[in-house]
Image 1 (cartoon, rainbow, N blue to C red):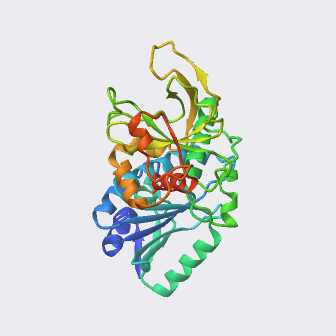
Image 2: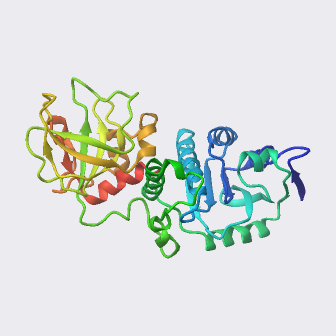
Image 3: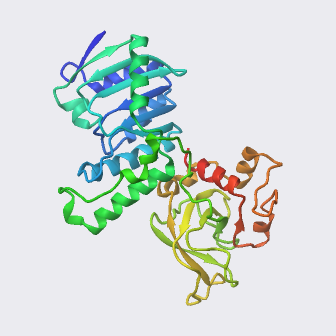
Length: 349
């Protein structure tokens, strides 16, 4: 048992030292730093390949403004450093724990007064205890998982971050006030049953895969898709099959990498004002703004995905086992729902 403090050393150093033999960190803190970049990079270098984050997400809390930045940074940093992650919620949380695991077994943990913030890890006068009693740590982990939610899906995280950002844009003067933000609606079912990936998507939704760009103008790898609402272009034939509420899984022409997935929020409309060969359009909302920023760093090409999914499995709504129509200029292909879920969950990792 060791005493941890921010006087002779600091919590950040002690946590990283504890992780030198670990591959998984369980990070439990109600308050979070707004930037995880440096921390996640550093622990990925020493061998940590997964982080479980347990924190609070309370309705109408001013902390939500900072928490949106924290969660966005956490997800982006994990993806950029190839660290697997999950986020759970415990809105009765007050304690702070940092537990190191190796091959799913706890090897050390720090129980402390220090939140995972710059002040908590380094500046404030905080004290904690590092323990290596595996039975005690097992009990703490079981308690944490029992009282917290199931892991939030990427779909739910994106929706929450988007709601908070939209509220801040609409109410720029209310950052220090108590907002009127209902966040728990996105994950209240998580305390009752486990749902994966995009299981919140309605079963009557149609799913399409759609190219962005064309042969003469491929989608360059330094581009990103809009994080909010954007226009999706279709050919000179009206995309009548694409309805308000449907999902468009997009990939870039040229790289053939997945760019993100979008919910259609308008009926198709015609606009040939820019003389494009793609005059039919719909407006669509980005449901994967985090992934859409880092798509180029991923290896999610259509050929790679096809190999991961299996060569002999159905891909399209009509039972086809290839996406060959896209190679002949199709502006979308309706997908088999199971394959669409596979693509969406792949962008959630």
